[in-house]
Length: 314
Ligand code: SF4
Ligand code: SF4
Ligand code: SF4
Image (tube, rainbow, N blue to C red; front, side, top):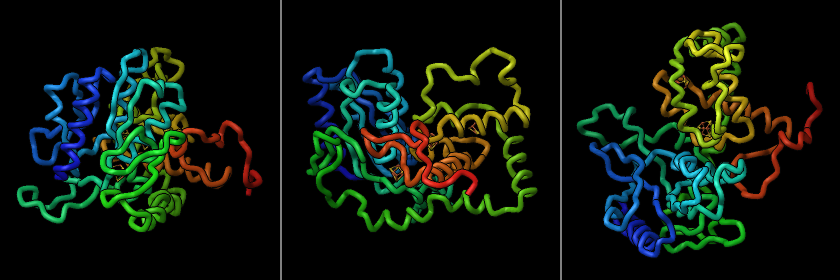
């Protein structure tokens, strides 16, 4: 626990609520177990002491901003690197109004994965979540202000300095190589084996839609998988319909997936959903040149312009 950081979070929240600058603060609070730090929604000054941040504050809070999509209420939201990328994506998709959100950035050293702890009663050397082992942007890439002494550029929302709580370029550098590791492993399997593996995954899918519901890139007001139009797909969890769901979702978040890994983290069936997203990202990078979603507010989108960097078929 980083006590000074938590105190600063609470102070910022208290001032924003006291001045009526925002009506709601979205952050995290300590849950009922040592390994739980779920989202918290703070509406008045008396509640700010609930705010908390530790290595279990895993949820990407960007998605909750969609609850304010049709409202003019101003909201402040605390963000780690992955949350900030999700917010950029929501702004770019015109799902939230930039002027209605105050984004407060926090340093992120990576979140612990309790599921990997061998003895939950005596945890030590806690391992990181897979998504954090591969994360290349643990520091917020966009914020109105940062907790700590670092300021942000009013032009781009990017941090203008670093301080010890933030991950360094060196610590992140080695993770860049891991971005397509899992996808390459799957891709290198013989095609029959690959098809069988994905068939097995599709059979396991429960169509619970947890992957969709937690995803900041899955932000359509109406989803085809909630539609009653039978000609699109059945709601029954059949292997063929599940495959259709998994592939359709991966295509719908193409170019918009901020690689926060939340979809895979919450999947109760252990399906490597991120491999599908990364497969699509890898193809976009191959065809259109280097691209990362949710890094710059003002960026161009490869699939919108479709300026191919390579000849199709190569
Ligand atoms: S994905 Fe990155 S920013 Fe998000 S929790 Fe993990 S290390 Fe932090
Ligand atoms: S598809 Fe998964 S990794 Fe990509 S933005 Fe959505 S939840 Fe995050
Ligand atoms: S979270 Fe997993 S089981 Fe649920 S719909 Fe998504 S892929 Fe299927």
